[in-house]
Amino acid sequence: MRPGCLVGIDVGSTRIKAVAVDLEGRELAEGHVETPWHLVSSGAEAEPDDIYQAALTATRSALNLVPDFSVIGIGVTGIAETLALLGAHDQTAAPAIAWYDDRGERELAELEQQFGADRFAGLTGLPFSRTPSIVKLRWIMRHVPGAAAARCALSIPEYVACRLGGARNSELSLASRTGLFDVVATHWATELIDWAGLPRSLFPTAVAAGSPLGTVVNPPDGLDRLRGASIALGGHDHLCAAVGAGVVTPREVLNSCGTAEAYVRSVSPLGRSDLTAAVKKGLCVGCHVVPGYQAILGAGPLGLVLGPIYDLLGWDVEAESGPASATDEEASDGRTAAPAQLSQSEEPRHREVVLTFRFDEATGRSSFSGIGPGVRAAQAKLLAADEMLRRSF
Image (cartoon, rainbow, N blue to C red; front, side):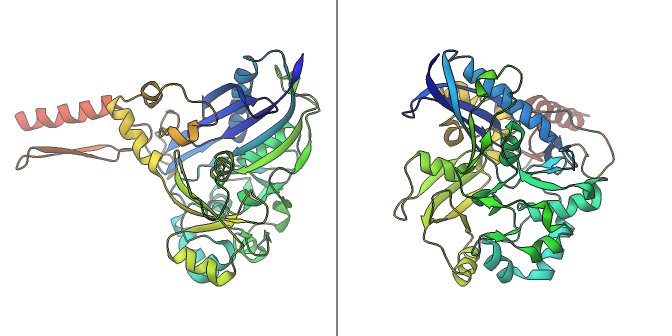
């Protein structure tokens, strides 16, 4: 067996990636699979165990390419606002809702009425939106039977680390994206947890990025080389990308462009009034993975918007740009979540996505609306053909 290597796992919005690097940081191999979302009318959700199994598949793919290397450490990064709720025996108590999912309009209005934008921003460094976990958690408590039995809430990267054998801990930068964390005091905001109708014990201690969480004692099938490897959390994926790119001082800004596009800058910790001012300018502020810094983010769903359009155009981004490694894919790939079966259920969160077509005879221009994950070129062609046939008769 050759000298040890390190494994990084990135649970992304579009793909889950694993990369093996040597102790000098040189990439040895990578593997990836599509993130196993189930598409719903409001966005997407997934079973946490499906995400964990996909992470294992990506890891096996990478390690199969370097069979002679032992593994001495595992780091996990990824999306921040998507949470796994665990019961007393580690069973999942609810689906994990994607950060870009739109459910929670009523809950968001209630949050704004209770706290006000300035107070919320001064605590969390976040604006009012349906992205932070707090809104979706309150929605889950109202709509998902059995969710009240949950005993622990972990972000998806934290959940993967826990399933590998790590301690149940949160990480500061990931906690900062939940809307439940006081980024100035760097602990959970009990008044926000109480508002969400959640037990305070649901949220474990938040630790700094890179803190050791334990070792792999019972490796998953086909991954015996993980036995004894140290487990750590890298933190929020955009911030880890900044560290990987060497963009860590206040004089530098990183454009991390994936399913979400984020501009990331390191700053010395801000007070509450400065947090509020930053949020009013359209920014977010949270704990950084770099000790002693906070991170300012300006973000938008660039890849989420472009991905379905790429699909309709038949543009294979990876084929155009060449194979992407697990370390650069987040910065180069704009495609969205894996296609899945759309449910026909009448439940509010399981209605089929509707694509509509309009032809303007005055200008000769055609337009589509409702383009989103799961929409395919065949649907667009059929709609256009049906409209032309209708006009012909």
